[in-house]
Image (cartoon, rainbow, N blue to C red):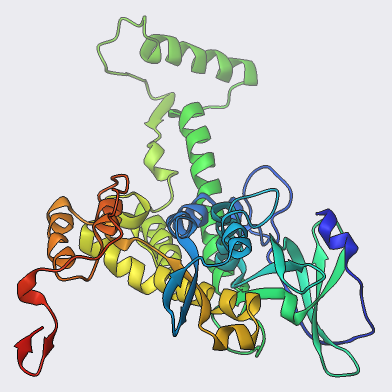
Length: 386
């Protein structure tokens, strides 16, 4: 993007580097780092990417005057339209895809002359280095897909990561863990293609017990096909040969890779991305989704909320109660019976009527943001109901 060309590099020295998994080239999938071209990997990460893309980013301010949602117009627009090219949903889906593939993802924060954030851009990079200048301030140097190099201040980059171990700044790469699995997937896919080709070409193997000229072998083979394999043949499903030739039927299953091994490998890939077949095929139950949400989705939502709050607000602004939260309506996947029970949350003042209507996919109602409460659930003071 043109925005990256306007940044200024400064005198810095390299401290850390990280190689991203690239997605280049086209054609038949083969393991060379392009794991996103695998249908198994793409299906494994898609539910998480789509779920986080549906979260709603909100600016929350909690101070002596109470709780306010999206009190500043500039921040509300930034969280709805992070840049002229995409919505927040698109930015989140791009970012989480990179996070799943590389265990690292980056977002650049463009600021105005008053140091307020005005745009957010996902950084599509192949290589990242962390640098430090003479004063000890950190910078990120990115090698972009088009070959250009840009350097941003650490405070202007939102860096999401996971699987931290060897590197103190970057999440460990998926390369070593996924390489053996993806090689098995690649070999199995090629074996299936060969099996299909062979099963379509070779059905019978004819062995002649005497030496024949090539043209005679071809003639005898053609005659066998016409007599016994042709749809117009007068045979009744039986083939007969004399001692000069032996006919053996080729079983296509002999060419097909072990189905059980294929299933085991696929499940290992799913397990690596903390998912399963029910989540991928959308056949999950309410409990299945809640378990997946809490183990795979919620940690990344918490990380998004923390990093956005830290990078979009100064320490002083955070001290006055400003923060960014990403809300995910996990109950949208609940059964209707569970949703109807939410009425108990309304009359106890836990949820507003409009919050329940949103879960039921209904439009908000006038005055629906007002919390209500049954009289027998009112606050108690001194042992008596107020």
